[in-house]
Every structure is written in C-alpha cells, then in structure tokens.
Amino acid sequence: MRYEQKLRTWRNSWPIWSALLLTANLALLSGCGSIPKPQQPATSADARARLDQTQLAHGKAAFAAIRDLSVRYDGNWFDLVTRIQPVLTDKTFRKTSEERMLLGENLVAQLYMGEGGKKFVLRDGLRPLGERASVWVNQRPEINRDKIAAAHLVVEAYQLFLYPAFYVERAAHLERLSDAEINGRDCERLLAIMRPGIGNSTEDRVVLYIDKQDKLIRRVRLTLEGLESTQGAVVDVDYDRFVQIAGVTWPTHFYESLVAPLPGLPAHDFSLRGLDINRGLTRSDFANAQFSERAAKPAALIVVPSR
Image 1 (tube, helix red, strand yellow):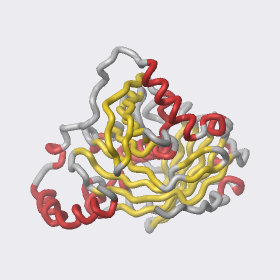
Image 2 (tube, rainbow, N blue to C red):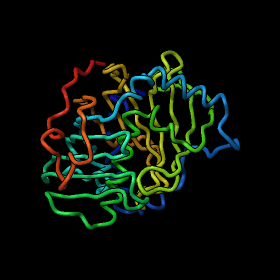
Image 3 (cartoon, rainbow, N blue to C red):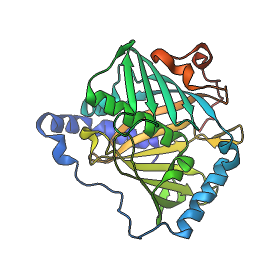
C-alpha cells in the first residue's frame, strides 16, 4: 500500500483509535513484535554476501572516504503518535534539524529548531553506554533521564535511517530471512542483531529490505528497546527518491510507521533537504553546546527528485 493510501486508511479510523487511547493502557498493547529472533548460531556467508551487495550499490568505497557528514532534515509528525509518545516525538523541537556526524570519531551533534526554540544533542560514542548522550534545551542542560534516553535513541536511529547498509556493518549477527514485496518491489530481507542496540539498548533487531533489482534498501524495520516507553515497539521506515552525492546513493524521503503496537499507524513523514561531505569538522566544532561557525553553515541544499 502506498503512503497516500495508508494515510487515508488511518485518517478514517483515527476517531476509533482516539477513543481507545482514552480508556486503554498502551503498555498492554505492546507485546507482539514482528521481527524474528536469529535461527542460526552465526552469520552465514550468504547473509554477508547480501550485505556486501547492497553496500556496493549504495557506494561502499565512496562512503568509506567520508570523515564528516552534514545533513539537514525537515518533516512532520502525525498527531496521534505525538499523543502516544510525547517524549520521543518532542514535537515542539523536532521539526527541522541540522546534524553533523564525525564518522571516524563516532560523534554526532544535532541542532533542532521548532516552536519551543533550539535543542542541542551531542552523542559521543567514546563514552560508556548510558552516558553517551547529552542534551541542552535553549542552552540549558537537560536533566530529565527519559528525555535524554529518548534523544539518545533518536540520534542513533537517524544514523541508521540515513545509511542503513553501512550502519549495520557493526552487527553482531547477520541472517537471511524470507523475501517480501514492499510497495510493489520484490525485496530480499536481511536480519541484523545490533549489540549494543540503538540508544541505551543492549540489543536491537533490524531488518533490511533490499531491492532485488537495484540492491538499494527500500525499508528498514527495527525494534526500539532503548527507551522504557518504546520497549516492545517495532517501526518501519520506507525509503524513496534516491540521489547520488559524492559517489553514495542516499534516500531523501522517509516515511515512518508503527508495526507494533498499532500496526500501520503513521508516525513521521520527513525528508533530507541538505547534505555535504568532509568540511574538516572536529570535536572542537561542538564545544559549549553549539555549532562553531564552520559547523553552523547549513548543509548544502539538494534537489529532491519527484516520486
């Protein structure tokens, strides 16, 4: 089902779900995941070969040459999901973002701009798990542990969303799953077990849906174990409108929806608006919870293809 059809279906059923949310404890709905656990003791040669194929299709050699990455996102949250997950969606801040990644340093900085002002997130992979994310809201340090955990989950999930074929390179286990059709395209499926997981999680499961024809990733399905309120949840992120920049093929449109606990619920429709590579950024460009002049320059505008 295409994005527009999914949205129409959910808009027609929103009054029913809204009534349910007023009377039901959502925690009781969150049990059934739809990502299988591994059935093999170790990564198979076939699974490794499938990952190699999609990495090559997305520009493996060019990606390996990226030292720092600057991106800009813009998008919209759907109303019902913001009521279900207000801390995670954080809609007063998470509208437009400028994000900077030092791939070799394992460091990511995000600057969100929304109705609430500015929110700055720094994720430092050199710190111990559970202490890797720091958050500032309008230049004031955030001390709420749930909000920090949510920010940590988001900052790592967005790395996965942008370059899934390369993000799962660190997977502890890879395994082939049965094939599936996604939005009219025949896809192979590859299960990746991430340890540690996404954000504060010790483990998450990720499924890559790889187009049989062009070997590009068309969907990512993942668990969200890094935040107490999302444990047991599973989401899909569908990709389209690919562009090639600096030898890498990037998705520019992302449609996020729930698989569990509320199957098909639209969550987030967002786009990659800007991207540039290798500015020469360093850790010093993110001191004092802000971007330096070099880091603050907006990511280079990209031409987003039509559907």
